[in-house]
Length: 81
Image (cartoon, rainbow, N blue to C red):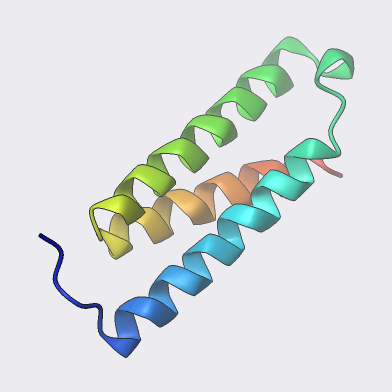
């Protein structure tokens, strides 16, 4: 049974989902085949962070989800340069 979310929880979730979406969008524009081995590792790590952030959202661990989403977004933006 899930408890109702507060307005703050909903806002946090929207912000985190926005970060995840931005990271995913950036990664979609990256040509994985053209990346060096180190950059591929960075790409894979960003994907893992996204998955972990989504899992953290499911259990409403917003602090951890935000941290992971931030890391994924940072890595994705570095690759997208």
